[in-house]
Amino acid sequence: MTINVKPISLMVVASIPEGKAAIQNFLSELKNVDIVGLAYNKRSAIQQLKSIQPDVLLIDVMLLRLHSIDIISYVFSIQSDVKILALSPGDPSHDRIILAVQAGALGYVSWDANPAEISAAIQKVFHGEYYLPLEATYEILQEVAPELKIFAEERRTKIFETLLGLIPLFGVLSASNSHFKIS
Image 1: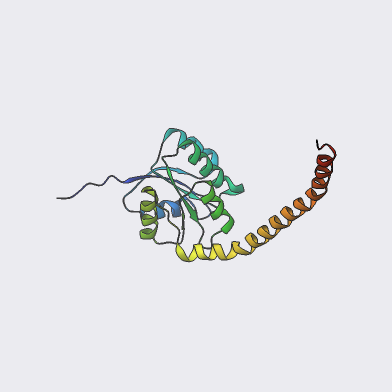
Image 2: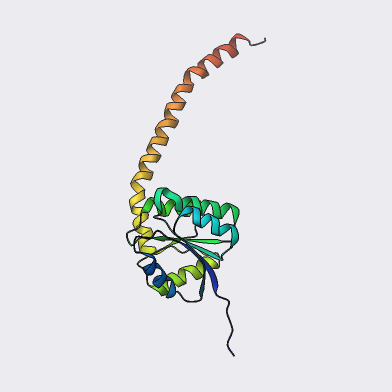
């Protein structure tokens, strides 16, 4: 007895440096996936998303001017049932991966991954699970750590400067409080 599993409906939004034929070939190798939409820019993606509700949105993070992040935010806020998986270049743009996850993507997978890995990532995200390739995520954390350290130091400095600025105010309040004390 075979169990007929309904394929995952997938919409793909991709930049097209490799060309449409390469993207179609890439998509044809995915297992248990039904491609219900394919867009190459923000306008087309938003228009299609108004008429279809895929199970999973696979979106290239390298769309011009952070349009991929705009699309992820739109889908996350308007179509919360749609699960989002970011698609990154082989050498991921770390800031875009972080922004994609912050906007609502459940993870990311590389264009360079084999079809079985991409299918597995789509499956996990479809089930509401995170998909973060371990080695690439470690590299992202390594790259971002120095920036976070600088940010933390800047924040500490601002807090200290704010506290120093309040010292004269405390003096004025203390003086005015003692002046108006009722005996």
